[in-house]
Structure formats: structure tokens, C-alpha cells
Image (cartoon, rainbow, N blue to C red):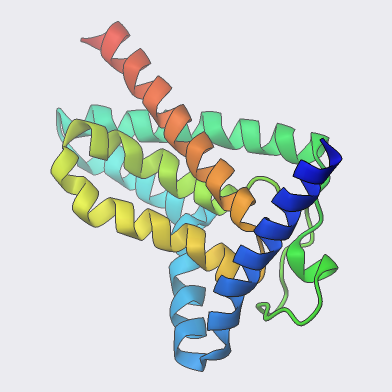
Length: 179
């Protein structure tokens, strides 16, 4: 069991360095620093509230499912981060490219990735064609977290799965109770 944990951690670190090395380019660093904010609280909460207010049926119920998924997923993120104290890669690994004033809380799971996947998934489930636009955006947010030195790849993958799962369950709940 110990060997498999070591292998997993080494693989996680190697993947981390693969993405983080790309941030040595100033243009790509600035682009990813912009993209990462699409998973932040200001954008995810603000855009979800605006969509709930401005959209009409049936998209309004999809926006409500996104808002509920964001709330549910973030509650889980807070609980997991309190229980699993994984230090961020820039605090542990040498030679990391990292943003100015990085978060100092725990790394696992990625809250930004969880948030963006929780709000885009209901729209993708409602209209799969939207996945052509929304899935690359959500994926870029996740990659940006690694790129900027803030998360390991496993933090991002678990965040994406958590966001997707929360949104999937919320959408099923909404469809069952309201339709």
C-alpha cells in the first residue's frame, strides 16, 4: 500500500511540474491568471445569481440547479479541506512558479475547479451542445490552478468530479421535485 501511495504522489508531482513549467511564459501566465478567476467566488456566485434573475424558463430552473450545486459542492469542499490537510504544492515542492499572494489554506480539493464544474454541468446536462463551449472553459480553470502553482492535478480532478457530481445530483433532484 505504501508503494502505491508513493507512486501516486510521484505521478501527481510529475504532472504538476509538467503544467507548472508552462507558466514560465509571461503571456501564458497572464492568460491563466485571468482564466482562473472564472472559478472564483466572485464570478461563480455572481454569474449564477444574475442567471437566476435574468433567465426565463426553462433556463431559469437550470440556473437554479447550478446555484444549488455550487452551494452543495462548496459545503463539501469546506468540510474536506478541514479534514484533509494537504499543503499546497508551492509550499512543499522546489522551483515552483506561483502567483503573487497565493492562498495559504489547504490544497485538496480545488475549490475553483469544483465551483466552475458545479455551475456549468447543469447547463451541459440541459443542452449537451453547450459542452462545446463550457467544458473547455471549466477544464482550463482546472488546469490554471496547476499552472499557477496552487494545486496538484489530483486536487483538480477531485474538484471536477465533486462539482460534476453535485450538479448531477442537484439536477436530478430538481427534475424529480419540480417537473
